[in-house]
Amino acid sequence: MALFDDTVRNQLKTILARMGDPVTMVFFSQEIECFTCRDTRSFIEEIASLNEKLKVQTYNLVTDKEKAAQHDIDKVPAILLLDGKGGDTGIRFYGIPGGYEINSFLNALLETSGKREPLPKAVAERIAAIDRDVHIQVFVSLGCPYCPNAVSTAHRLALENGKIRADMVETATFPHLAVKYNVSGVPKVVMNEKHDFTGAQPITTFLDVMEKL
Amino acid sequence: MEINLSAGLFTPEKNFLQFDESTVYDTVIVGGGPAGLTAAVYCMRKGLAAGIIIKDMGGQVAETAGIENYLGFRYVNGAELVDKFREQVLQFGIAFREGATVTSIQDGSVKRLVLDDGTSVSTRTVIIASGKSWRRLGVKGERELTGRGVAYCSTCDAPFFAGKDVAVVGGGNSGIESAIDLAKVASRVVLVQNLDSLTADRILVDRLGEYGNVEIIYGHGVTEILGEERVRGVSIRSVGTGETRNLEVQGIFIEIGLVPNSGFVKGLLEMNESGEIVVDSACATSRPGIFAAGDVTSVPFKQIIIAGGEGAKAALSAAEYILTQK
Ligand SMILES: Cc1cc2nc3c(=O)[nH]c(=O)nc-3n(C[C@H](O)[C@H](O)[C@H](O)COP(=O)(O)OP(=O)(O)OC[C@H]3O[C@@H](n4cnc5c(N)ncnc54)[C@H](O)[C@@H]3O)c2cc1C
Image (tube, rainbow over all chains, first blue to last red):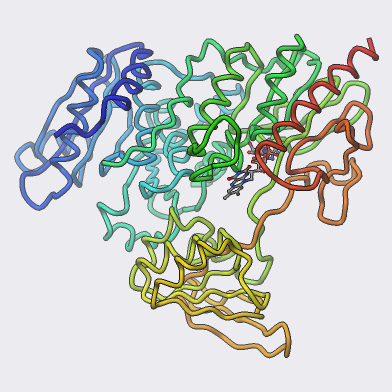
């Protein structure tokens, strides 16, 4: 069954028509014990059918262990994006990016394809200066209108600096992580397991925290 | 699957112009709600060299589910209306900055707006359309426990309170809507209202009445939010007797209305006791060349159509001011 109706499909097509370079969506799933994997797979496939610059690779978390390890994927469903040269962008979506997150997903596709709004010089310099490995997790719920902003900011940071990896984590799919990281408000941003803040903060707040890691 | 697509977010970037720090603009608009976006359209049609700085696109409209009193639409979803506004603005090559906040204005014949990312913008006139944001309670524990049980957005955060006891503060429309969202998942909802009745629309109050797990406490205000790592309760005080007692809850949703976003011009412009910028009927403030429009001003009644109309007026006033200065 189609996930998107014709109106949405056409809107998505128009948006994706602006893509520059090709983008590969790498999808990790698992046959059993993953009740949202099938929907996520249909989601990816439908999106991919809307523009020929979009490619899909599918792996299984269990049987393709090496591939999962190479990209540090530890849970499913997971989507990671590769740029036009096949390089890992550091962008990950854990859980289906439906609801409001469709916006951060499209934004990630466009930005990975090279369509990025320029950053102010001072901000770009601060991002370039980050020289430690940073792992950003952005916890979201799909009914949250502020969340895509936080996700897109984290993903932009990952795109700009190879040391940074940024995950969207959909809390309804991973309730145990919501408990583990004490999430009771979204968006919640956790950096390197220890530092966190809540709310859609500007990129400078992300940088303030990152520089203190 | 539900999809909340904001197609307007993805308008082609050829229409975005970057701010240039060495240019002196004719006018710069602060805010991207209905007032600011309408002002932008009028400024561009007047041929002004204009820019707009927007913290969050759409302002309050972006957070509104359904709108039924903006002419031309019998019903329109907030995000959809914002998309249409935005598209209409971006047909013009306006200098555009989203995600940045103006933190102060230095007055003079050329005014300088300072942004939170350290950049600044120079301009002959300013149109302040910074609207309103959710009011905080301002009690002990609120800031410390935000995201740890203190919440402001029920559509975002209600799921985290499944099976728990929660309080909602505020008996207006947003308080009742929030209580309804929570009643569906929480085990118990306590609504705390400082007045003796609810001020929300009848239809919402009736809908809340359908839930058996909601208790309403009238005539009480919240004085403190309790808890160290997480919320474990709230203190409430009776408005009548001054008596205080504690409620044991694991969460509190604060829905007590809005405050004007005028802090960044405090001391510069005349304001009323509610912190709204005082404007005359042409949207002029107490300083020449600085205009203001919409919810942030002293103009009574806060509605989309009113904010839009005021934004148009402020733009035309700014254009006229520039003509007389040249
Ligand atoms: C839940 C809800 C439902 C509503 N329903 C309706 C309705 O059905 N019909 C109706 O007519 N009205 C409705 N309203 C009221 C209506 O939304 C407002 O009157 C209107 O949005 C005011 O427009 P504005 O442009 O003045 O301000 P806002 O919409 O508040 O926009 C302010 C803008 O300024 C930005 N900003 C703030 N500070 C800064 C800064 N320092 N630097 C840069 N940018 C800044 C904000 O990010 C935002 O973009 C509703 C309001 C709410 C909250």
